[in-house]
Length: 165
Image 1 (cartoon, one colour):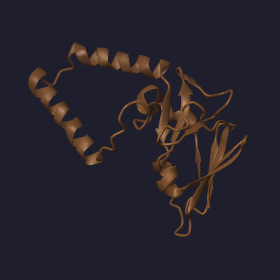
Image 2 (tube, rainbow, N blue to C red):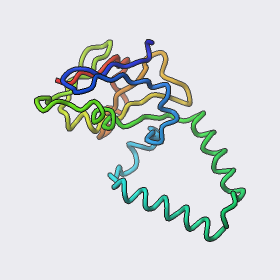
Image 3 (tube, rainbow, N blue to C red):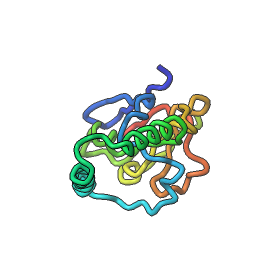
């Protein structure tokens, strides 16, 4: 239970977060490249349209069977998951908790103290949950990275909870 993170405060729904299952989440991001790339905010509908178009084009060109390239892509993805360093955007969790109208801040509670961010700053957070394919057991369960990457080399470690004020 030490890996479960409480999400509480001025929210409609008090939720808990389990970083152990995020490795299977499609929203995960590769932290080795996330802050290096130009972090373009993509429209979700546009992403979906592109993915469907790519799939449709592949079926037209190669047929509806699974060509060998798909098998190697799956193998590559599996290896990437087993050796990668990943994080997940914080915004969907914040939106699911539904902050109250009067809420203005998110406080990151860690063993080292508290960090207070505005709601808009908190929406940009990335929660790191694995390094080199392993969960963050020694200084985890998660690390909090600011959306602009300004604390990329010294993230907030030993995060125990989030409180909305």
